[in-house]
Image (cartoon, rainbow over all chains, first blue to last red; front, top):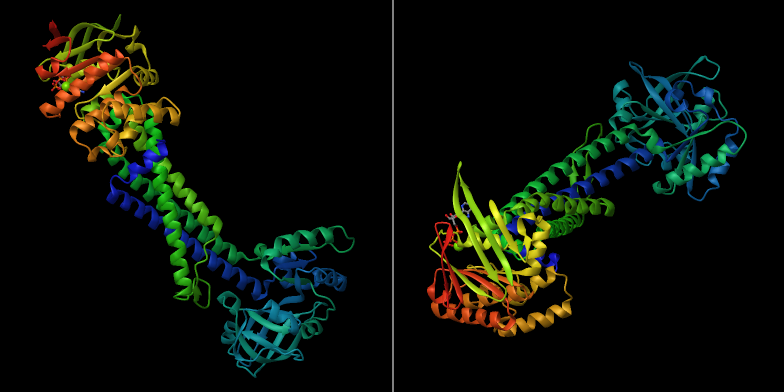
Length: 410
Length: 227
Ligand SMILES: Nc1ncnc2c1ncn2[C@@H]1O[C@H](COP(=O)(O)OP(=O)(O)OP(=O)(O)O)[C@@H](O)[C@H]1O
Ligand SMILES: [Mg+2]
């Protein structure tokens, strides 16, 4: 007759009460599993859309401050041996594409209005892999043979009142410091899903941009990998590779170092999750303390008898902790199972749930619940630990009972 | 040989600010192998007296010596070990563990002593036979009659072969006939194993099974009858 077995039987003495306690834990853990699944899916979606909205997985430049101020003066950062670096990167199996890019601030003017825009220029044939989330809302995409033609993001088009087929004038500082201007035909209007990007991005083919700016290499090489998981390893490998070579100094940044919005959202959800977890654990703690204090009270005489026949105080504490352990275990397991079942029902039967546009996003999306094994395990262990911890208070109350008085208790 | 000795034992309970005295200087001695009855009106302090002998309560003044050990000088852990190894308790309301079967209730004190499963099995089966419960050994207390429950309690009290068994109105919740059977059983065990018994009772019939009866009144042992 081990303590665990005795505890197991004791928790089923008052089935109704145990059922309610378990339900509270179960629902709490289920909520955590679901919320974690939702956050993971959402962050994953945000991660992929960030990467495929022009960030790529890894960015290479010739200096650290290119990443902060480079767009206003790209000429200081041009690669001197672009060809060799591209070849070295492309030699790695994890690398899908290496996209040379130049980004620069320009003024775009229609007949009536003008505005400051950020021009993104990449080879048209590589733009699919870098701008996978870009959607055409009017007109068409750029074609490989297009020169002096642009795509405008939706917000830009609205701002300057541009239509597909119109001609715009673009003005910007070129390499020699002079102002250059050129006429461009709008072939399409796109959306990127992020309002911030939609309000300033303009897309051009790289040869046109290089001719316009009078440069023959770019300041930025964007690497798109086969899979996002490879990011860390490839970053480490190429950083080491380029550090060991003579030539221009190189700085490698991973996408998450550059994605401020993603980091903010991630931090926000992380905090939300911690708060939620704290509240749920608080509920679990009080539920268990409440149930088990009642149980200690009801079993006062029994505790007195156990002590009278030689059970140590520790034995009483162990018994109630074991009861807490079982409650945590049962509540935790059923909560996790319920969470996984509800997740998969929502994912498979209902095709996810529609989430309206979050702050900063242009559109809502269909969310799925993809809880991770690790956090599910964490939540489960948390329930277990918290249950045992909560049982400590009633357990010590039970152990502190005066035996003679406990035996008198009716 | 004297195994229990109370010297000038005082015990009272706080009632608000005042202390109500219950025992006012009790002196008594129990010899090994004795079966002693304690009688007295309700509230006279029988239970209090037994609790002091069993180390589950401590005197306000005076000495309680059991096997020459001063119980007041022992710590909580030591007292629990002492109770587990030396004493057996039988209560009026049985106080069995409701989630354990008859077998498991009797086995419990042996588990506390860390005795192996095989040895436990041997001893519990023998005890079940001795108290006549083999047929219902897998029943839980709520599936047993009052008499059967008190047999389980007796089995539990005696399974560790205690030197002293303390029984507080062991027949108080039983009908007359069943009470007699239980007393018969305790008397047999007392005679066979030379276990010392001290039992509190209201019932003269129960007292008649003992060799010596102490009468408690107004906080003192006022009379002693030896048969
Ligand atoms: N823990 C306690 N707190 C307060 N009063 C107590 C306590 N224990 C006992 N008493 C009081 O001490 C007195 C003696 O009680 P005790 O239980 O020892 O009597 P008793 O002889 O066993 O009575 P009964 O025959 O009814 O069992 C009673 O008046 C009782 O109310
Ligand atoms: Mg009493």
